[in-house]
Image (cartoon, rainbow, N blue to C red; front, side):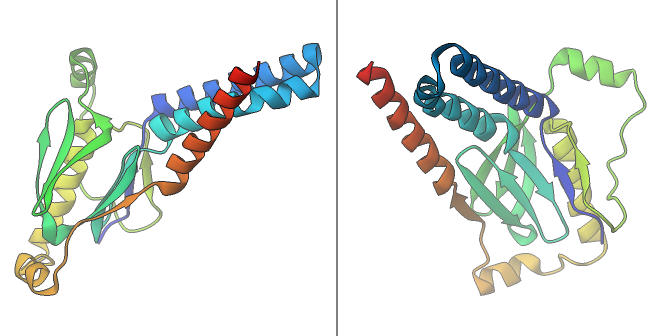
Length: 203
C-alpha cells in the first residue's frame, strides 16, 4: 500500500557522532603524548562511551509499514503486527497500545511546548501514507510525528479492508507482539565496562 516510514532522532545522531569524534581525538592525543600502549589502555573506556551513546541515541527508532510497527528501544526491539494494534497515547513519550500490553517508544518523546509553537507557525506536515517505493526516512522522531504516521497507516489499512477480521484471525493463529532483547549490545556494554574497570583499578 505504501512505503515504509522510518523515524529516528537527528539530535541523537549528531550527539553520537560528536561523542565518537571526541573519543577519537582523545585516543590520538593519548597516543601522541603517552604512546600506543596508553592509548590501548584507554580504548575500552572510549569504546564504552561510544557504544552507550549509540545504544541510547542512534539506534532507537520506529518503522511503520503495511505489515507492522517496529519499535527499536535501547534494550529491545518490539514488533507490533497490525492485528494486535489498538491505539497510540501521547504521554511524556509515545505509547503504542496493543492487545498484549503497552509499548513505550523511547525514540519518540513528546515535543516541547516551544517546538510545538514553532511548528504551528509552519505549514503542517502531511500525515498521509507515502506512495510505495523506497523507505521514507525522517530525523524528526517526536511523539506527535510518529503517532500521526501510525494512525494514518492504520486508518488507510482499515479503509482498504486489509484489517477486516484481523483481530479474530490474530486470536485464531496466536499472532502476538514479539520482543527481541539486544543481547549483543548488552554483552558489548558489559564487556567494555568490565575492561574499563580492570584498566582503571590496575592503575
